[in-house]
Amino acid sequence: MSSNEREYAFAALGYAGAGDEILEMLDGFTDFDALGRSEMEADGVRETSFGSVRRLSAPWPRQEPELGQTMG
Image (cartoon, rainbow, N blue to C red; front, side, top):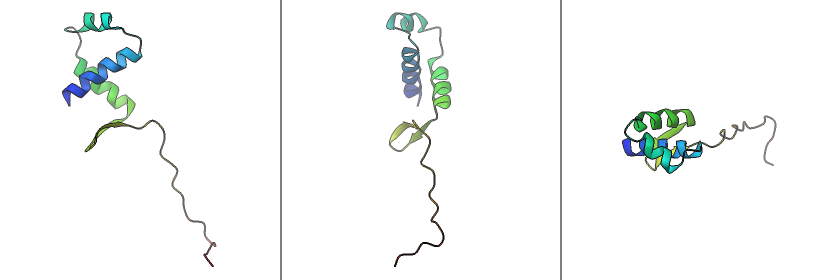
């Protein structure tokens, strides 16, 4: 997952406002894999058989059937 972590780090820095010039300056001095892992963990990113996924919102609340209702 190293390339994904590195890419995620670059994307996170880009979202934070770092441009290409700053990213080039940091390259070679920054552990982008560790930064990417940290950002992925903070964002709740999970690896699945479909690739990396990130939950953007809370899951739907579980609906419990109401007692007393029947189909008739």
